[in-house]
Structures are given as C-alpha cells and as structure tokens.
Amino acid sequence: MAVGIWTLSTIGLSLFFRLSSSFGQTYGPLAGDHRARLWAFPTSVGVLYGGAVAAQLEAVRAGTPAPRDGEVSRRPVGAATAAV
View (cartoon, rainbow, N blue to C red):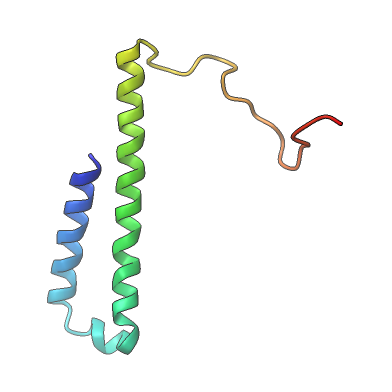
C-alpha cells in the first residue's frame, strides 16, 4: 500500500515539475527545497497509511478485527499523567 502511494505521488509530482514551466521561475533558488517538501508530504502519508493498513490486517489475522471497548484511554488535555 505504502509503495503504491509513494510511486503514484512520485510519478505525479515528477510529471507536474516537468510540465510546469513557471515553477522554477516562481520559486527561484528555493525551487529544490519546495520540491523536496512537496514530495516528502505524500511520501510520509503513504508510509503512515500503509502501516495502518498493515496493522489492521495483522489484527484481523490474529482474530481481533476491532479494538475492545475501554481499550483506548482518553484523558482530558492537561490531565496529570500520574497521581502523586
């Protein structure tokens, strides 16, 4: 999953940068940095999504298709982590 998303985003951005004649003119010397940042975002999304899908598939194989009630603890923001 992650490899597919990464491949599609890399090919898509590559085509965009090749066909865009004004990208380098707009960003000037920072164009390389912007390209790297634009490429890093879909790459990280693909890796995280692929990991989530792999974890869910592993949970289904182990026989636990969904989290049990109460398994996720929810604390209010700013709540103390340990009682003193």
